[in-house]
Length: 578
Image 1: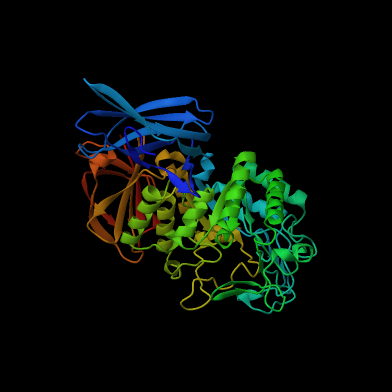
Image 2: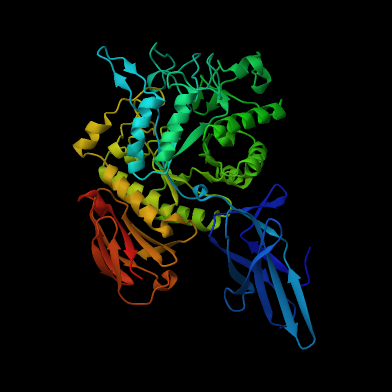
């Protein structure tokens, strides 16, 4: 309905499922509110944006101003004070010597989640590989939660906030995959953790090879003492041996001959995994999933990485997220949805707190600029990115050379473009052997076998990226500008091989310059937009936080980056003294 003073095109707002759903925010975050406001004639308009809490109490009232003179587009800012649900309203007034009129928009919802929904450095490892050993006869002995706990201090020392574990449940026997996805498993092959369930239990059970439920709880407690949150995998699928297959056969898709259909993601086939059919007993499946989530929450888990959520109904996730927000608002869900943009965005609108992204495949200056601008400025009301440099499923082509410089460069980009980033164990060791030409899968993938890594020996060798990763995470923790998403600004460079961008939060201003070519030195002029950064024209003193070097830069700065030198020279992460 159009009011007396039309207030239209309000941003940010998120329309989903026939209604406005909350814009994503975090506590103390400042949101720019915009709207088009018009009134007949030539009368002067004034406008305000008003913030309300969930009870309808006014929190703040801020004047809005025209974005550009004569455009009828107004902007103002609100600051979300704490966690919780809020809404904002835009009010406009027009006064003249004949009369005073006013108009008001509808309430537009905003939800401030805890900071981990936006900010985090994620690390992934397989517990069965941590502390695994090889016997004299060559047999691999699985690691356990007790041996994996010995790796926790090193993960925390690298500055990671979240440790993500692939499924920790019993693994199916039927159609178990062998090494390198072989259809025939040997007697000692451990199976794929995502093929969940056997006679020892399903999604509510612990793989006995990893230990007991008590061992897991102790593992979670040990991680928390080190400042690490444990993220569990929520994979809503089963092996053919899962208890659900017998107790609830209606939860699975049947072929014409009555057999259960295994999972497929062409050209990949997953003979060891059954997908779930959500249409025949929705209420039963929903109740069981909630029970499972609440079980693990009761064991100290407040973060879940959801496997392939795009292969389940979006309305199912909306129901789950609404319930969890009401009952357990601390719980964070990361969508592992490498799929079409519209589906990824709908999952965000349905309530997922963050998502994997296309960053993994964006490599050129144009690709990175376009995509980072998209997630920072276009989709940020409903889609929070988590930039992963690799996963157990994905060995990107650009890493397959094993060149340490490309590993360092991609880590800088992921960790500074996005408030959340992640890496899978082995990245710091430059693991890069591919399974086949033209593919993006690891040779001897950890999905199918236990990997024995002698971390102490490898770290002592010095041939790791660990110190560099540690420094990047230290910089992220100390600088609030790198903990925000919507403050990203790109700046022009004369070279397509060098990308430059800035982030500012209050008086904290970070400038990042990265050489995107890991094999050659490049030099360029970087043309910093001083006005956009809130700086006066003239020289600025910067400190490279990677190595402590000081530079005098200006609006047009000459920069040379040589990746053939130590890894610190693939990039500058510079702090501006304001």
